[in-house]
Length: 398
Image (tube, rainbow, N blue to C red; front, side, top):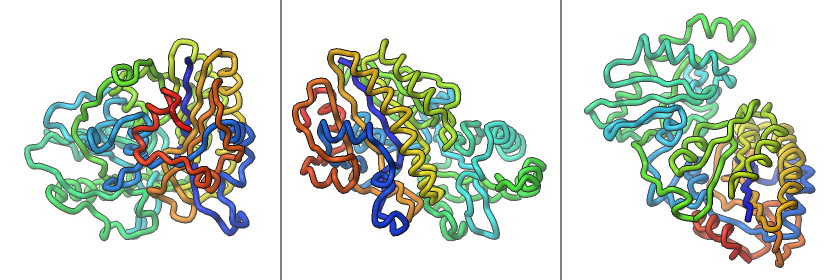
C-alpha cells in the first residue's frame, strides 16, 4: 500500500466579494482535487485543538497524527532540529523573524522575503554584536531564523507571531510576562543595529523592504515524539521548503527529500516537487508534500496569487502524483490545508479545514467538488485532528 498526503498550506479561506461570494478554492480550477473529493470521502477536520493558537506547527502535528496536547512545546524547537541544532536540556529555542519596522509599525513580517544570503549575513552580525554566552543566532531560510537562549533566567513570556500583527503597533504587541525584558532588549537593540546597516541601504536602493529588526516568538524546549513507524507501522518521507516540516520529519524518523527549487514561496518549483514525490514513493510507504505558497499569498492578502498557487498545486503536483499512484495496486491519497489563512484577515484562523481522501478501494463517493462549503455539507467530521492520520492509513473514514 502506498500513501500520499498533500498539504497546500493555508489554502482554506472565506468568501470574498471580489470573487462574487466564492472562496479562492472555489474560484481556482482544480480538476484533480475535485476528482479526489467527488470519487472519495470529503469532510472537515479540526487541526487546531481549542486551547492552541492556529499555527502550522500545531496544525501539522495534528495532520501527522500527533496530539499537540501531549507533545507540543513550541514552534522554534521543531524548526531548530532541521538546522542541525542540538538542543540541550535547558536550551530554549526561539523563532527569530526578520521583519520590517516602519515608524513603530510592523509593516512586513518577512522583510520582503529577504534572501538566504542576506539573512545569513544578518545573523552573523547579530552574533557579533548582540549574542553572548547565553544567546546565539542561527540562519534558517529567508526570514525564518532561530535564536537559542541558554541563560539561567527563565523566559515564559507570551509572544505574538509577527504575521498576526501586520500593520499594527510594535510597542502594543511586544512580549509580555516572565523574561519578556530579555526578548524585548534583543529586539530593540537589533533595530538600532540593523536600521542603517549597509545590507538594508542596498535593499532600500533596490526598492525592497529592509530587514531592520528581529521579532522573537514561538519559543520552546526540545519535544519528545514517538517515531512514526512505531505508531503507524509504515515509513515516511517529506518534501517541503520550510524548516518546521523538516524538523517535524526529523523528530518522527522520516526522511527529508531535498528538492532543488523548493523555495517555500510563490516561486517554488511545483514540477520538481511532484517528480521527487513520485520517485520517493518507490522507496517509502508514505510521502508528504507540503507547499507553502497559498499561505504566503494569504498573508500578503493577494487573491490572484493564492488562486494561482492553488491551481499550480492541482495541475503540477496533485495531477502527476495521482497518475503515479494509479500504477500501484493499492494506494490512498489525502489532500488538505493545515489551517485557514483568509485573504481578509492575512493571518491564520482555527476553522475546521476541508479534507479529501481517495484510494484504489474507495467505495463511498461525495460527488462534490473540493471546497470549504461542500466539505461541510457531507456530514463527515473528524473532531480530533490527530486521529485523521490513523483513519487515513487504516481506511476507516466514511
